[in-house]
Length: 227
Image (tube, rainbow, N blue to C red):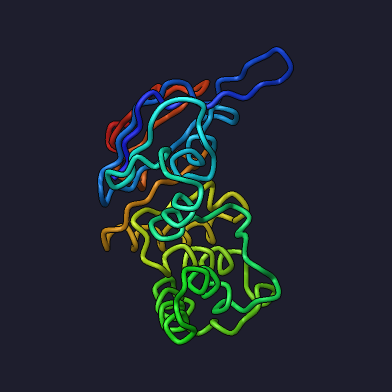
């Protein structure tokens, strides 16, 4: 599903170079739930942003579904990202003036879906994350966990190949985090490929596989039962 070779991201600060991601070779299989862990500054989110095509690396290759995505034009890359990938962020990134349904509909409409089809798919996605009775609520009328589940529904509304989640429980209490993680597990059990960044090892062990980063390098690659 995902394959990288010598993936490198360098940031410059004056004369200093910071190798946020340093020659990473990685493969993610279809249907896998991969957790990325590591201390603050280890490169977790930077790696996720490269894999999710939200940033461009300095060196290396990324293949997604056998497509060399770094060789795509900007327009083709944007279309590929909209069609194949879904994103969940720690700050939810949903629009406060739109209802839950409208937030989930928005990317579907951007992809050219008719309004009726966007409503159908958005409603289905909200049902899948347990918010079928909250489709007309504004974000201000929803708890933090419910808002995060709206963002998950938005990520899965177009049935992406891969969901990328960057610290999706960072702003939530433990009980709310549990509900959000259960939503991910249900999607995973249905065959969804998920790549999730988390600094919580208790959450990372819910995945099929855990990689740990330090100074932009993979220092461990384990199954949860090996920890």
